[in-house]
Length: 86
Image (tube, rainbow, N blue to C red; front, top):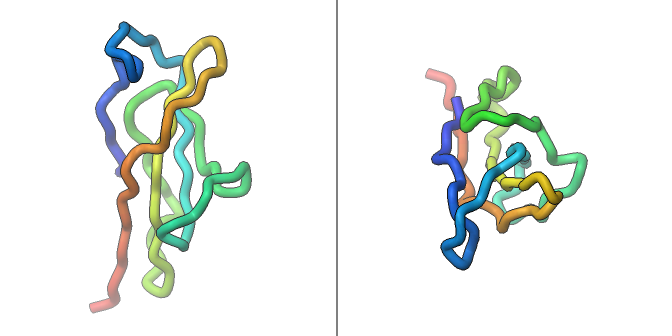
C-alpha cells in the first residue's frame, strides 16, 4: 500500500487544494513519467497496487498532485518496492 501526506500548500506557502494525485510506476529508478507509467489517479492519499508482487520485478513509484486548474506539482520522492522469494 502506497501512502503519502496530502498537499496543503503550494511552493510559495499559499494554501492549495489538490483535485487529484497521479501515481506513476516504473521498473527503472530514474524514469521520466509519461502516460504509460501512470498507474492510477486518485483523490485520496493512498493506492494499493494489486499487481506489484512479482519476485523477478522491482518497481519504483512517485506521486504528482494536480489542482483544479490543472497545475501539476513537482514529482514526489521516489520509493521502491522489492520482492524476494524465500
